[in-house]
Length: 503
Image 1 (cartoon, rainbow, N blue to C red):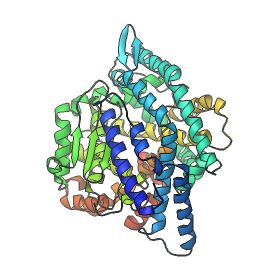
Image 2: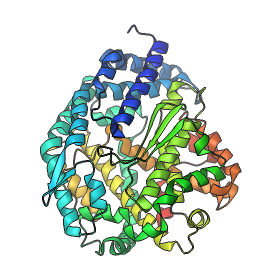
Image 3: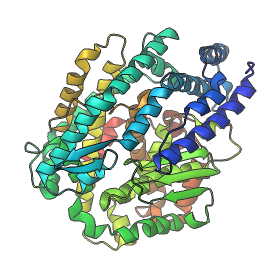
C-alpha cells in the first residue's frame, strides 16, 4: 500500500469491519476457529512498522503546529492520535496474531475434568457460578487454573514478550510508555489515584462484602476462596427477583420508555442463544458503526444476567445511535472509557430501587441493591489492583519472574480472598483496557448525577432523558472522557466521588 493518509483511513475502516465480524462469529460460538490471519494478511500495510512510524510522525507534526492553539475536538491532531493507537494496536496484534488464534482455538476445544466429568473450558465459569457446593466450585477452579498454567500461559507469555519487544523496537522505553503516549493518559498517575480510591474504600469494605458473601455462599470474607466469587456474583438467592423470561422484555420496555424501539433497530442484533463454544464473557461486536452492531451474552441466570445484558445494551445503543456522518476515528476509535460509561449507566439500572419497582414490580429491593453495591465494590477494588499490577508488569524495569507472585499479592490484598497466581497473564487485557473500565466507572457517576438533576430519579422512564442520551451517544467518541465530561457538565473525573457513591 502506498502511503496516503486518506487511503490508510479507508483501509483501516475495512479492516475493523472484517476483524470485528470474525471475533463476533467465533466468540458467539458460530464457528470453531478464529481466522484472523487472512484478515491481517489482506491489510498488512496498516500495521507495518513504517505505518506506525508515519502516523506517529504526522501526529507529532500536527501537535507541534497546534501546540499554542485551543483544543478543537475536530482537529486533525485528535484523529491522528486515535489512528496512532490503532496502528500500534494493530502492529502488536499482527506480531501476536498466530498466538492469539492458537489461544482462541485451544480455549474453544479445551476441556477440564472434575470428578470424572468433562467440562468445556469456556463453560467452566458458568458451571462454577451455578454450583452450590463450595468444594466442587474449588475443584472446578483448580482444574481450570491448571489448564491455564499448563496449556495457555506458555502462549500468553510468548505474546507478552513479543509486544514488549515491539514497543521498545518502535522507540518507546516500554509497553507502559507506549500506551501512556498513544492514549495521552498518565497511566502511572492513574494507578496512584486508584491507590487512593482503595484506601478510601477500605474501612467499610469487609462489612459490605462480608454480609453479601454470607447471603450467597454462607461464608465470611475471611473464610471465602477465590472460587466462591463466581457464586457470589451469580447471587442465586435473588433469582426470584430477576426471572429469566422478563429479562429481554425488561430491556425492551426500558428502552421504549426512553423513546427507543429495540425491535425496530435493524442495525442492533441481540444474540442470547446457548452454544457450547460461546464465550462465557458477554460482549458487543461492532463491525460497522452504526449499521451493524451485535449484542452477545451467554445466559447464566438471575441478577448477573440482567446486569450483563443491560451493560452490553449500553454499548449497543451508543454505537447504534452514533452519527453515521462522523469520521471513522470518532465512530470506531477513541477513548473507550466513554462507551464503557454508557454501558455502566444502563447496567446500574438493575440495581436501582426506582427501576426495580417500576419495571420489575419489586418493592423492598434492598437485598438486590446491597448485593449490587457489594459486587461493584469488589470489581472496583480488583481493578484498582489490576492497574497497579499492569503498570508494573508493562513497565521498563519489570522482573517478569516476580510478576505471578506480585499479581497474587496485590489482588489478595485488595479483594480480601487468596488470589491464584496462575491467571497472572490471562487476567490482563490488551492496551491497558483496565484504565477504560476504571475511568468509565467514575464517569458513570457523573452521568447518573446529571440525568437525575435534569430529569429526576426516574429519568429512565422519561423520553426527554432518552433524547438527551441519544444526542450524547450520537457524538460517538469524538471527545475523550475528560473533555466530554467537562463540556457536558463542567466537571473533572473524580475517583473521590466514586468512592463516596459506594459508601
